[in-house]
Amino acid sequence: MDANTAEAAGDRVADELREAGVTVRQFVFPARSGLIAGERQVREVR
Image 1 (cartoon, rainbow, N blue to C red):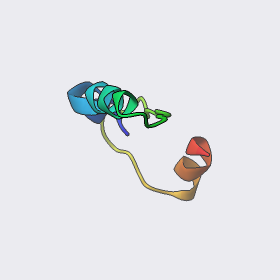
Image 2: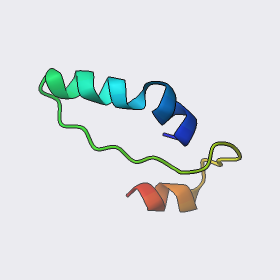
Image 3: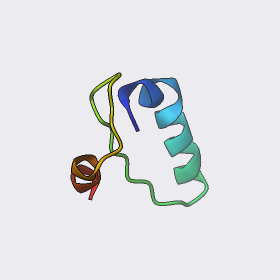
């Protein structure tokens, strides 16, 4: 997720999932705009 999504709902959603017994791993791209869904970004997440 990007920084905007994390700020808006990311932590709350992650907390709800954890409370439901789901293992959560969060990866937040620090950029707030200009993100591109490309191979380099996929490699960062992996």
